[in-house]
Length: 285
Length: 267
Ligand SMILES: Nc1ncnc2c1ncn2[C@@H]1O[C@H](COP(=O)(O)OP(=O)(O)OP(=O)(O)O)[C@@H](O)[C@H]1O
Ligand SMILES: [Mg+2]
Ligand SMILES: [Zn+2]
Image 1 (cartoon, chains in turn green, purple):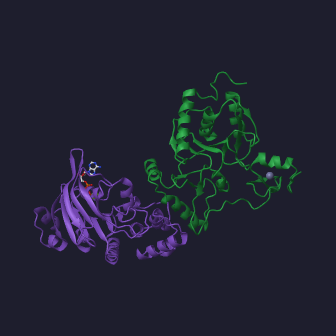
Image 2: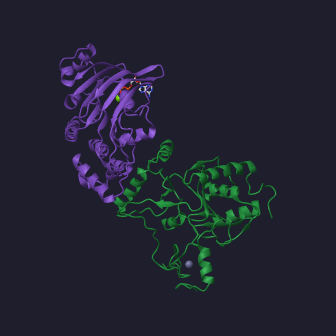
Image 3: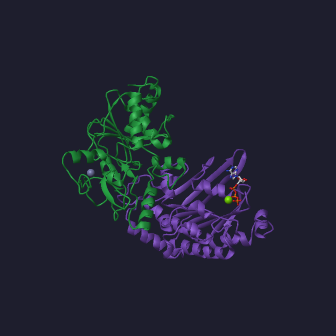
């Protein structure tokens, strides 16, 4: 049942039009951060209000929505955003990646390859990849417009000089179609290759920072690196304890208070589907 | 010979107030020009107008741009003397990280304090496309040596360096890409006298070895005596006297220069 006190998907039509214009501009200039007038949402900023506003602007009554947080459909954050849209838009929801038309995510890209027609909406805390070394917004904007990206490599240089390798493992910067350098939000670098060339539309919303950016389908996104320190999408070197997958991104979970631990897929839908299909890891009951 | 830099009628006002007015001079390759004058005489304003940090109200700053090397992506037609005031901002910013360098009085204005010494020196290399970590590091190590900073400090942040070391690091960071023209605003200001002397020796060596052209703004006549081939004396935004350093300092013609040299003026 849609809550009749709200417009469809909570935001009024004028606001959604404004956000859609920002999205269209983002799609037209892949990787470019488009400013938009972020609205107050009935949830705190840390909860992905940027992603929620983008989702609200693209959802139609026929859509099927999936919401994940670190790969899981059942965290408090994911559950509350999903129920928010059930309540305000009355859309169908799912946990199956394949069945979803719109997927809002925090910190992961689903394991199952996305397809044409799907929209992946990322919640973004800090959209500016140059921020950590150049705090002045006026200067970072100029750096983007003039393609002055030497500073990104200074960050990677610092990583190697300190750790012997590029230690950045989340929010690993990419160059989009040879032009804009973009922060892919705090997804693990393991997911970076999936950003590139995907048939789905990828939209990024930063609520507090009031920025939207996008990767249209089949857009190239190259992870920055050095010739002698090439980018490597690493993950824990284990199979999943529950479904035995060897190709998925794993979380380490504590299983008891005796220090027991196991590695399981962070993508709960992927893991569950594999178990249902008969795959069994060494820790499965 | 074509001047490396030809400054023509540079004028800058701050509202109704004069910053500098109608300054012209030519700087030839390998030459060091000193700009002296009391506080508020317009030295920094002039320097910042020349270096592209401030937009002058009038005048031209014509720089003899390098012919791009074969296969370089740069424009192959547009080299030779160019007015940097009217050139596009991307071109000017490219100049300021390749052929130009700027040494600030306060090292913290010219360094990234949150980045290691090696990263500070490597930044300009990476900005012009260096993508081999080992070679960037080798060049950074080499440059730390040239400015007398122990190679063992390469991964330390400048916040852990003394004032003199910070200033030397700033110089290394600026010279690593082999610029042809260096702008310096009071490079020895704020340092202890003994530290100043060492920095001056170092600068003099680098200028000679690299055949650098430089424009140095300073209060300190000892600095220009040591480094500058020619000097300009500024007062109230205008150049009142210019000439060979020794001539101007030993036999000043303008009354104001005479005061300056005789140290009657506390500059
Ligand atoms: N941003 C500004 N706004 C207004 N007036 C300024 C500004 N900067 C400089 N001025 C004025 O312009 C004149 C020249 O200043 P400038 O800083 O160029 O002098 P200077 O010779 O470098 O002095 P100092 O030796 O103290 O560094 C001074 O009268 C100064 O007060
Ligand atoms: Mg000054
Ligand atoms: Zn699994």
